[in-house]
Structure formats: structure tokens, C-alpha cells
Amino acid sequence: MPVVQLKCNLCIPERNKHTIVVDEDKSTLPKCNAPTVPGDLTERGCAYAGARGVVGGPVVDVIQMVHAPVGCAYYTWGSRRHLGDGYNWAMPGVLENEANHRRHCYCTDMQEKDVVFGGMDKLKKALLDAFEINKGAKGAFIYTTCTTALIGDDVGLVAKEVSKEVGKPVFACSAPGFCGVSQSKGHHEFNFQFYKWLMKLREEHPEVCLKEEDKTPYDINLIGEYNIDWDLLPVKPLFEKIGIRVLTAFTGNAYLDDLLRLPDAKLNVVHCQRSATYIAELIKQGFDVPYSRVSFFGIQQTAKALRETAAFFGDEAMMKKAEEVIQEELDAVTPALDWYRERLKGKKLAIYVGGPRVWHWIKAMEDLGMEVVACLTTFGHTDDYQKIVERVKPGTLVIDNPNEFEIEEMIEKTQPDLFLTGLKEKYLVRKFGVATLNSHSYECGPYSGFRGLVNFARDIYQAVAAPVWKIAQEEF
Image 1 (tube, rainbow, N blue to C red):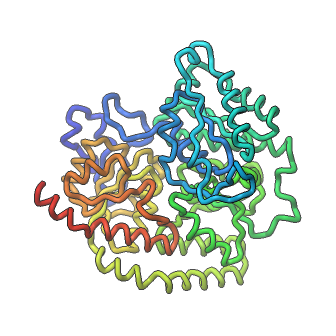
Image 2 (spheres, helix red, strand yellow; image 1 turned 90 degrees about the horizontal axis):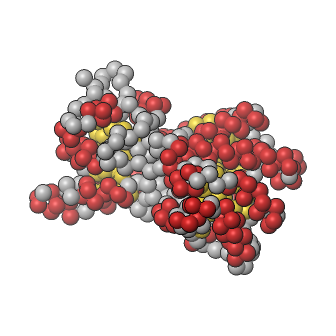
Image 3 (cartoon, rainbow, N blue to C red; image 1 turned 60 degrees about the vertical axis):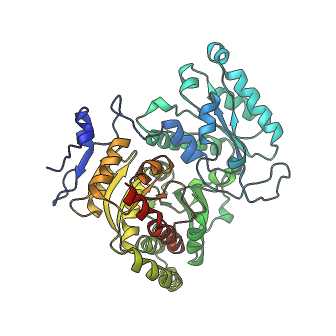
């Protein structure tokens, strides 16, 4: 039977449907996108974390105001390495190496009395103070959390009042932690609410739209690319080399003025298909701008993304140039990848990240000759698991929303040489003598594109080949 009974779940049989071994016909999928079983030590984040920490957080030139007790803000401050070359707001127009969303943490610091009497006045004052301190900020994003959503503060009203007073756009996102089963709900809420706010802003201020004379026939947006450890750097130039202009990314290293022009592109190229397909679909419905689903991880997938994007425009010269660029990149990276492939071939690998990156990376690991023996996701949906099951071999262990005990049992069952995972789980797994690699924020990226795969392979090799694991395994 595909469904697996793990020893650690004997007392919580509800978890059984979330754990499968891929069968020959690949017809069974794990139960997913469901509330966590009470008492289960879930690794999930909340909807607020999905909105603030993933989708909205990378925008570089806005005030990111968290309307909450300070703990909710502190958790997101600098915890994800979505880097940006933001403005120096003390000297507007002067670029620095680090974006302001990484240096500053804005929070209303709600106290008990604020919860009792309401925090709208405190939020307004905090925003006005932040704009006074940071005169170069182009706008502000406000995020509610469980506390401020439960007491019913009208953050949308405060956003309108502050926007009118300072003359800059202010977006209010309501995605409190309890509004969904995982951070995936926060992705969904931010996308829909931002689109609605964006449409109203463009209608009231048409000057923010891209003028007709400034458009080109080859304008695209990179949707669901968050510039983790500079992931944009190996990818954006590939499109520019074949004659395509990238207007903006949603939302890695993005500037607010550019985000306001999202509907002005000719095509949306969607990378993270769980967190941002929503806004691509909305723009398609509202502006008849099509979108394509791609991956920028690994040789096969990056080449496919370039070919399909060039083919969309139907330009023979562009398609020819795409092949030239692909070959140029292959010539540059093949010697290094061959060296790593020879040393990594046959190594067993377990992958545990949010959702789509699992099935993105299965293909990327094929480029390195590695064998995937287990796949785990925090918030994968049915379509994610369909792609995972399609891409792995029968016998692969798949777990939805795993807890620590299930991770331990997975390690014992599959005996991977490497676990691609986050910061929380690495300490648990290393006690088993198994190497880990930071897969949420990377070790030393970027990991995307052709050249990013070399960095990925380097970090994988350094992790697997470290002599400490042999010592740890002997001790264990």
C-alpha cells in the first residue's frame, strides 16, 4: 500500500494519509493543504509569515510596517536573505549595497492597553514617524497579525489617511496567522489584495502606468522570483542577452514604481508557482497578459525557460539567440559541473522545502547525477505533489507537513547522504551524522540559472565531503 504507517504516528493515525511511498503507477498522493493535527509538532509558518516574510518583504523601497506585538516583526526581520540594492534614504538617490527592508524593522509594538482600546492611532503615528525618519521611502506596506485582526483595527482606513497626508501610496495587507492552514494562505491573500489595491491606484493615478512610447514588444515580468541570495543575478541577464526586457520581478529586489507597472508587460514568466501564480492569473483576466510557468533551477529547466519564452514572442532571431546564449552558458559551466557530477553521482538526497522548490530541485539534482530518496514539503498543494510524484522513482518516501519525529524516521528509513532543508531542522539531522544544506536562504548562492547551479553543486559537495560526517556516523 502506498500509504505508510510510521512508528511515530501510531498514536496520531490522522497523519497516515500525509505519508506515502510512491508506487509504480504513481496514482496516490499524500493528503495536503489541511489543518495541522492538534498536538502535532508542525514545522509550518503562518499566513502572516507568507505575506510579510515571503511575498511583500523583498520590496526594497517601502516601509514594511508590522501592526502587532514586537515578536511578530522580529521573527521576519532579516530572516530571509531576499537581498536588494536599496536606496540610502538618508541620501535619496544614492544606492547602497543593502536594501532597507534588511536594515530596518518597523513595528507598532502593540501592548495590552492597545489591544483593549484599539491600536489604530498608534499605527498612524508609527507610519507618520517612519515616513518622517525615512523621507526617501516611496510608500509603505502594513501587515496585520492575529492580535490586530482579532481586535478589528481598520488598517485600510489608516492606510488611506496616511497616504493622503504624506502623498505616497500605502498598502494594507490583512493576512493574520490564523486565516489559513499555512504560510501558503498568506501568499494567496497578499497577491489578491495587492492586485485589487494596484488596480485602484492605477485608475486614480494613471501617471504610474508605463507610457505607450516607453513600452517594447518584448517586455516581461519575472513573477514569484524573490532574489534569495541574489538569485536574480544569473537569470535576468539571460533574458536581456536574447533581447527581452525585464520590467520587474514580483517581488525580488523590486521597487514600488516598477511593481505598479506589472500589467504593462507582454508576458508574465512565473517561477514560484505556489506563491505567485495568483497575481499572474489576475493580470491575465484583467489585462489579457498571458503567463508561462518555468523553473530557473538546473540546466534542463533554465534552458527550457529561455526557449519557451523566446518561442512565445515568435521571433526567429530571438530563438536563435536563445540557443546561442544557452550554448555559451553550457560552455562556461560544463567543466566545473563535470567535476562535481563525478563526485556526487549516486549520492542519496532528501529534500524538504516549502512547496514547488521540491519538484524544481528534483530536476536540478538529475543534472548532478544525484538520487532523490525522500521529498517533504511544508505547505505543498495537490498540484505540487502531482509534479513531485511524477518526477521521482517508485519507492521514494513523500511526507506532507512533517513533524520532527517523522523527519527522524525518514532519515532512518532512507539513509540520505544529504538533506536539503532549513535552519530549524539541520541540528536534528546532523545528530544522525547526515550533512545538511540551508535550502531556504542558501549557504553561498545564488543557486538559480546555469552559473547558479555551479554554486549549488559546490555547496552540496562541500557538505557531503566534509570529513566530520564520517566521525559523527561512527559515534552515532
